[in-house]
Length: 132
Image (cartoon, rainbow, N blue to C red; front, top):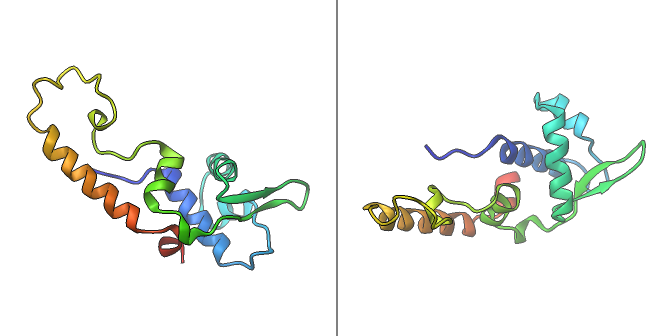
């Protein structure tokens, strides 16, 4: 079964929360974690990664926090997922040709078609659509 990871889920929750606020207001990891029952440490690491990727801006200090920095309409879900988790695919052989069964595999081509369709679908959807 194809699942969105907790990390991606928490990132989407955080972005949606930030979008509900005034763009000048900062949001802390503690605020989001408390409101949505998310583990603060994992959320904080996820927010830091999104800040490094330029999706959100981190403001240091006692009254610091995060706010959206990027135009979410210009970031596809595929790109967002891959920034947080790496290449988007259903099976490792889509990205790694070191599979021991690659020469005997009879489902590689159909799985590649599914992967290509999935990546195409996520390429057409933006973060703005999901977090509004």
